Length: 105
Image (cartoon, rainbow, N blue to C red; front, side, top):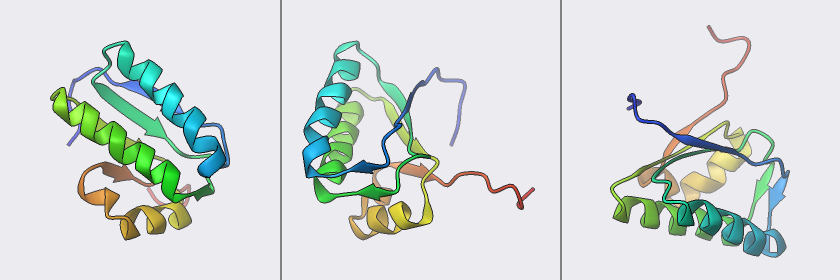
């Protein structure tokens, strides 16, 4: 559930997080965590494909944030990415919110 907690929002502007990009993604996330951020939202609106290495980075991030008693949410997940995240059961440890569709009010 949402609260008055201040979240840092990270907007991924990549269309994919494959094995090659996962290392850069991990470094980027580690830099954010080193700034003592404990409440993070990642906007994946631009993401069309995520590989197992990218999913591994999300798991790692969730674990580190949970150890700090923080919160981690993912927003803007496309249907295809959501399917992959659910297959990996990441939706059981991270709140996932789909993008708002213009036809839904």
